[in-house]
Image 1 (tube, rainbow, N blue to C red):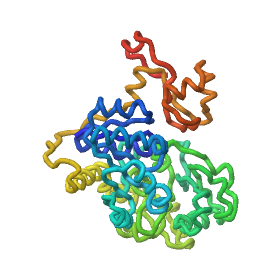
Image 2: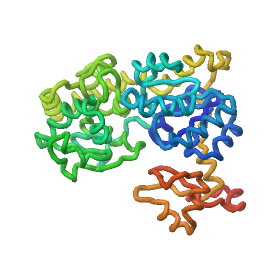
Image 3: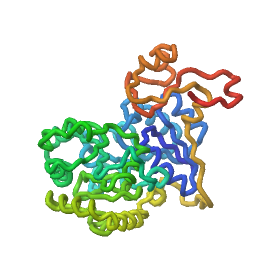
Length: 408
């Protein structure tokens, strides 16, 4: 089977697409969408299934309209994986579903399945997972060595709108007591400098490291003695729960129904329900590295059932049971092919990879072109760009293409 992922964000392109590949399917990853490249990919790749995920740069209104138009014109099943449920179901997920009209919805929130059914939307529950190509143990690196680490965005803007969000409970249980005890935590993620209203004090600036590239997160998990993992809901697990354990990290997280349903505290990970328990856990296990090692190894073993290959197989089974996919497909005998549409573009175009601090004006000045030229080449509808995005600058010469010239 051929599966096209309409995705560009690093959080999504390294997970489920690799799971489908592991199960023998040929996969194409779109990269940033334009009105030109969607029909090009559909025509060239001839997918049997098209998948979009979550909330990211490919979920703008204009891009959703393109997806709706071209995928449905191609008469290919379109699947959406709703990863922002339940907090943003009504404000984001439902407007997206209404706009793009997917044939089936998977949601990370089991309680939302009935919600969708009542609205005539076919849906099933599918949780997050991890893939060993991006979340695996690696040797500790000096740059990330620390006693306690957090890899997460702070989301103060969410708490302003949702003052009763369960993530605040997790913050108060796991992070606030350590900060008030002046125990250093190294924070990787956005907006931790804005959390004094919720934590009761300013985090020292030298403890805050800002944005961390998604493919680098496992380096922190493998280098820190303890990784604190926040939970967003009582009844569902965060994506990083799986990723920290898959990376062999020692996870301390919130004690919730979802955590208890899948893991055993003290064996696979450590779960705290009070500030006092958090302090006890941290103080004990910082002093007992051999106990940490045993739990890390067990946690990695127990989470193997949550690989994205398992998720891909489950998704196919559900779609076959729903009659959306055929049940007479041949069984794959090995891994499929993973095709990056952006890499094909790099063979034809000089490309710029967006880094921190880049703006369209700065990029245009660097390459001696206009902003309007870059926007036209890349089908951009606004000046917004994001880290790890690639931008076409100019078409390569015929000689460079024939010689297989690399990208800039």
